[in-house]
Length: 240
Image: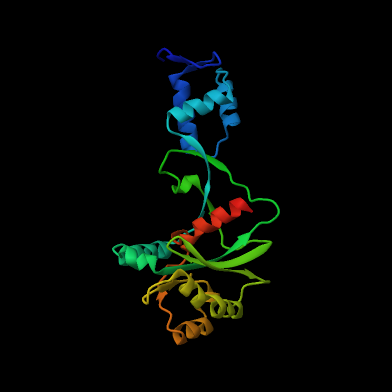
């Protein structure tokens, strides 16, 4: 076994290249390993370090702590549909996207916050499976909102009383869709984006959209992350 080449930290610790490699390998295998566990792991091998040293070494390797992104579990059919959507719309120009009215519902936690586990990752690796948290669609909540926006400007927002059903959806569309289109000054070829939840794809909703000559953007299932309104919701939840 070769000599251990050492770095000396600001705290006066001796830290060798082998220890650094061990740290990097550990967090690449399990990005959710917390810094104090890394310190304990090194102490078990005879190297005493501070948490600040562990963080500094990982930063030097471009591994920084980030809140793990939540990511829907996708089946092959979902991946194929997403690829088809990207292929069909990848060459659309800015005029097209400026005239898309994006919509969605969201749950706002008024009391308490969901946990956001941290992971060690490099820049550009946020969406790698090992750096994300698989989620399912439904869960508890204290308030539900429907909203829409286009090209960076917000349309209407609507507080949903109780459970969102097809009837609620039609009422919301009647009340807010065309007023939002006028407010946002969308072009005559504007397109409405809704997801594939049954309350949005029911015969009643489809008939209302057809009767009102609303062009709907085809949308792949299990793809809320493709909808830019998620950025708006994220900012709103930070401020609540």
